Image 1 (spheres, helix red, strand yellow):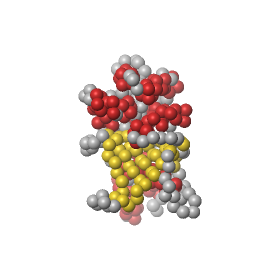
Image 2 (image 1 turned 120 degrees about the horizontal axis):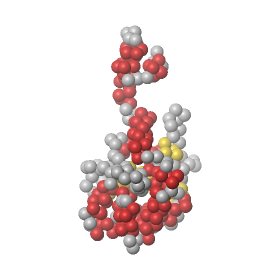
Image 3 (image 1 turned 60 degrees about the vertical axis):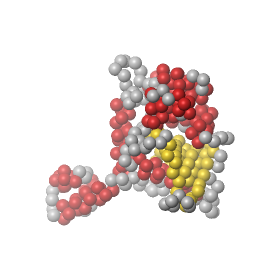
Image 4 (image 1 turned 90 degrees about the vertical axis):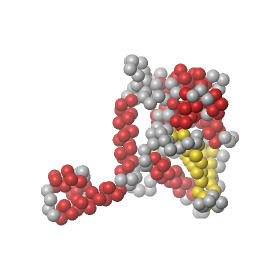
Length: 284
């Protein structure tokens, strides 16, 4: 299940856990009924209506690039932010928290007072959670013993998607029935057909994902190798732009400044610090 490409010349089947198919289905107003049912199963509560919000978050900084989230919706006096995380880099929680609190900040600035009307829910569907032993972890802002809440309108939910998959492969019928809406994201089309038997929601999701995979334009969008390279490039950009390597960069800058003061040749500074020529010249 880790690889999309097969050894034959058959078309790849893009699982729903990947960024593009996930957004194509659940971020598309055409499939609002699917998203509504999905969130009802995830949150175990009735969803009356859904308003899709802009997924590109403004940074308020002309230098900083805009941040794009996987899914952002408003429903039942709730703002729900969803991220599908195929892997689990060390900065994952920090990055997603930045996106989440960015939205909280922008929402509470509306009007002349602080908006206490909305509940904010961030949901992570995460793979490779090696240290997690629960299917879902729920976080709130409380004091040390949990007796007092700092803010009662903020929740973070993180689902262990690999654990959900284990129910399928271990033929755990009770949990398969309970967590079909999580298991479906990492199954091939044959397993999806089996999982969807008797479940209209999973059946419709399977049908739409299959149609998407049969679409030549979608299939030609990129290869698996290109997708992996794009993921790698994106992670590098996020690491830099969000300051997660700030300490290392600051250290290189200080070293470069000292080398400039000692009249060390530019090419040697570039090799020693791994800074570009342009970055070093800006330090003069």
